[in-house]
Amino acid sequence: MEGMFSKVANIKKLMSFGAARDSIFEDPESFLKIAADFHLGELMTEAQHPDTMDLSYLAKNDLRAAIEVLKQVDLDALKALRDLSDSLIPLAEEIQSTLAAGQRIFLCGCGATGRLSLSLEIFARSGQLGETLADDQIIGFMAGGDAALIRSIESFEDFSQYGARQLMDLGFSEGDLLISTTEGGETPFVIGATQAAAGLKGEAARAPYFLYCNPDETLCKVAERSRQVIEAQEVRSLSLPVGPMALSGSTRMQASTVLMAAVGWAILHRSHSGRIRGEVEKFINQVEGVDFFHLEGFIAAESEAYQSGNRVLYQPASHYGITVMTDTTERAPTFSLRPFQNNRDPDDLPCLCYLHLMDTATAGEAWHQLLLRDPRPLEWQGVKSLAGKERMMGFDFSDHWLETFLQQGQADEYLRFEISDDESFLRLKLADAVDHSFAVESLSPFARQLLLKLMLNIHSTLVMGRLARYEDNLMTYVSASNNKLIDRAVRYVQMLLRRRLPQDVAVPDYNSICRELFRQKTRLLADESVVIKTMEVFL
Image 1 (cartoon, rainbow, N blue to C red):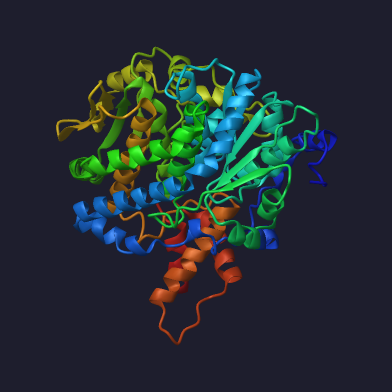
Image 2 (spheres, helix red, strand yellow):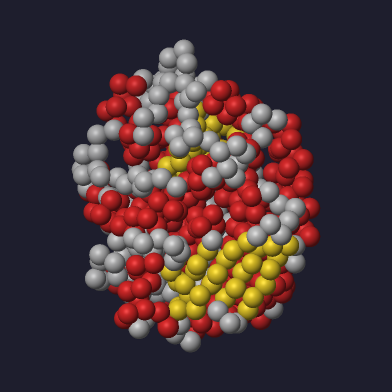
């Protein structure tokens, strides 16, 4: 793989941060110059799922049918993984070889795959992926550092050099193994980290793994950067296509579930890789046996709380903290929901839902309970104010934060959503409105995390549907905060205009819509949709 990442010396050149933040595309003309690199509409992960075309209607009018169709899409994705599970055997064997040699596993992702990378590190530290691993044996990281768990740094994922720098800053060296995950397979940050790992040429160097959920042929055709990494001999590419997402482009759902399951079971069964297929099959049977219809009451209660001006405070058992945080924080970019507020930013608006990690006295303790280690902030010039430790400590999930709310009389505005379990049951309780326990006695700790992820994804997606945050299965409230999402927003405007304009009226071209979308971004108010606002200009 000759080129900019072929030698360590060249990698180090890319690690200088410089003024890269200044090059983030803040105007349409700058974006349009590189827009062809982000025309991703042909990808399977961007397609509309044929079984969920009426999802927004079902969310409002037939919750049982909506739950059933989302559960089935999840099961179909898991069955696709089952059929591909033998391809995970070499990955599991490489994980075992790496750990046996005393080397480390690095897990890399961005957005949803970044959160799954950090989640898998936490599960490994806590013994949920087999024997408890030492603190530094598995290291997860995401674009923007640990602070991006709460809020992504706008456009950070668009820069491959940031992926290379974060990997090297963590001490990645020859003999270590990088496992990169990217739902679509085209994220520059993840590609940069992968190419950086592949650039180490010593005798002990291990080829990095690159996992994604689109077919190779389509991905290589759509994105040149993806073709380069997929065809590189120094990279072990692994395509796990599972079909379109239940909500168009919402890869936080099926794609991230499958990638988390694939890497998690490869770690769990690293010594017995032949068991992976049976593990997937067992989990499918377990999911099929769980009555998801009990989510109906939770979905109705949470959406009614928001519509009546209340908010929801999630209180998970400590070992479910990262799974609950992942679902609640991903609602902001997916549905333009107000993100978790930062206590050190007086301009932050109250968010609809928040998180409380019980039995923690300070923000630092809460972060440590969540991550099972000290946070890894980014203190880089240019992003320190967004990703540094001081910023992270402003996101306070501790008892101290709750006590402050109680003293201010604001806690009454929250309904408490408790999530806990014992040996036999997973219990969900939302205030006095609904309380149900799901039988999970046969599920392993990791399988319980996957099941909870499925439930929360269905729950939050349908809550947002009842709040009209998508149309049919199009994410009309998508936050256009990076190049991929800008392209997605423009495409959605085009699709919606085709439905609304008379047949004899031409739909505006991509460039015209893009320029108007950028104008609307500067005028957008909280809880408004840039897709809808842009579309209305052309009607």
